[in-house]
Length: 110
Length: 473
Image (tube, rainbow over all chains, first blue to last red; front, side):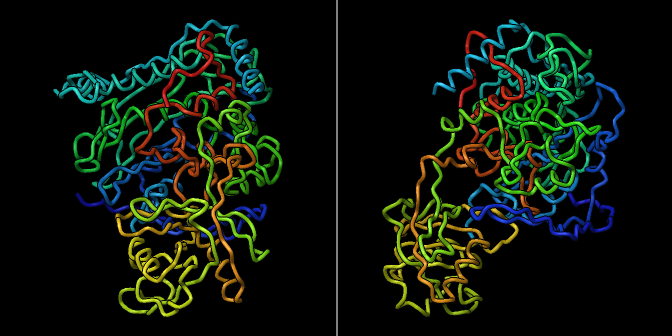
């Protein structure tokens, strides 16, 4: 089965590095450009509910939908590698990344 | 221990107000003939006695619901709207397994512990002692196409309870995980956003150690920065804090004592099927960066894949090479042959925060082998290039537990390219693996580990008679 053609959307580039100061014992992480976030599966986007209403409606109850999405890929050994994500960007990154790079807790030979 | 007893006692007192008669109830919303009602005959598997596909699926859901029912106390049923239907967009190698979360959020109800704070309706019902909003509380939906080779080829759902899922996805573990999101391990909006300017109860317990404030005390921009403050976003709940020592292992770090500019502990990764198990006595000495021949077996002069060109500098020292081109086993074998007492492999992926776990099999390698991140490797290389003596050893600190920072359990605040959802999971450095890490790891033993204590921190309580979770580890 071949992948279906996916709509190509504008690449997302968050230009401003958002490194946060931390003590010397920590890794420094930056969020700058997100490689691979150039394609969105329409089916994927449809699974995420719109962000909850940011404006105060005064209501004491609001209805939402499932925010957590479980995405799976098959690793090189044929075993499923599943991660839980809460936004399209994270889901797409997981799907786009080389499989060797996303199995963070699984030993790799090289 | 006294604090722990006090916490447990308080939990029991809180519980006694509502002698729990409520259960986690699965409501099957699938139409006849599909999903949970799929009549396809199947053989019982791994303790699941169902003889149709639909029945096996339902058995797993009900077992997961029963697990949570046995652990958490409420006098209002928690209604899980469950379905097993096709989710589009899959291929032979990837798919959406499912989705889940609370269906409604409530604030400022009777007995709400925190004002102006969103609670998932199941928890709000429990705390108020009444059904505040009739209807379903949690939605859990899984992908039925995983079973029919439309998605993931031969890799299907596994419906057994014995953890022998092999190349299949263990539905029981996944269902435990997703119901936990519905019980409250979630935000009311995609992190770091708030809904209607108000935090979810989860946000009030999300602490940024750098800022010294919880997320409900931070503005939008501060929370956005906090989202990638890896290692410094932690869970500020007393139950979890008291229990981490029971679940997590002490962390072993690479300690550099000199030069002073490098003097601190560094995260490391271990080798699996080769080399001596790194311990405090077997790993100590000066680091020497290996140089080798650049050829087709190893195109750089630092990959350690080919014959060393500084072989005289290696004996009795800790060799350091770059990751890449050849296997970890080859690098280790070359270092051992050159007389190194240990090997450090520097990652070649700057986007990954975590040093890689190194796989491979070899019985002839007896030196210990560890990995470090590229960021850490780069600063060590700078000192080596300046001819500094870099002295390294391993340090095992019983007060520093894997996955914690300053005694708090870390939440997942990943670097840009790490997969997974933000903050509504434990950090992936936790060892052993936990149910609510973003990766659903294959070695989980169907327990609810520290997840239940996180739920206690948010307001859930334990059944009065047990006082402790019934879930196995």
